Image 1 (cartoon, rainbow, N blue to C red):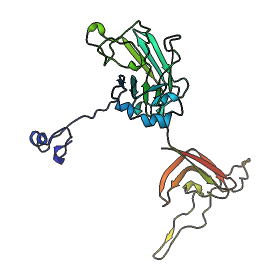
Image 2 (tube, rainbow, N blue to C red):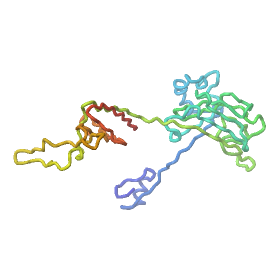
Image 3 (spheres, rainbow, N blue to C red):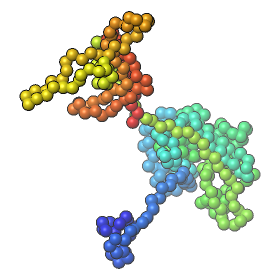
Length: 313
């Protein structure tokens, strides 16, 4: 950014702009081009504006898939219960997260302590492993496919009392559970550094708007070409012009390209063109698109052809 146009970044104050820069100086800066998955955890009865803002979406858009989406029900009260939330930017998945593609893995010291999958395709995150583990077969959360949000409510001990970790924001050792999934950190003591690791796997769906158009070249139509090779070679095509008129030749012969099974005589004349592109016009007859065919298609007088055009945008 050049000072000569009297503009600057909003991080530069007016006083600094007037005192630290001179006319013609170049002001540089950088744009933070980064994104990442965010994890939040809320203790019981803690203030949770991020989750309360999802109340209408959960009740109106997703409860038809599973009762586990309900903001408040016999299955749990998301306004008060301990809960973890994973927020995934849309740049990671596109239009929505693909159903049945979610796979969350909770490791401790390299061993798999828990695995969640969207096996039913209804948004329920079911613990599927390890086989016979604590909570196996239980629903530990739900996923909002279009919003890229996973709500984790499973609070059972994945280690069955054999392990604890100082997951942030806890100041003491805590049992590993799904509400702490993707929480990292420690109390600061070297012996308390966490040994948990996490795997998040999913696929995205990206919807592309398409428009399908059918262009018909009916029998007896589309029988003229502006390609100069369409006319017989050597004819006088120079127009006659004067102070009062302008006249083009009216009796030019069209080149006969009809195929004959014999070298002589040649086949009878048949008006034939090859369509190699299709132009799309708006209501004011302005060309807005041109579709080019990979291979020109022959069009004779008796032919009736329909061209199917698909436009992605």
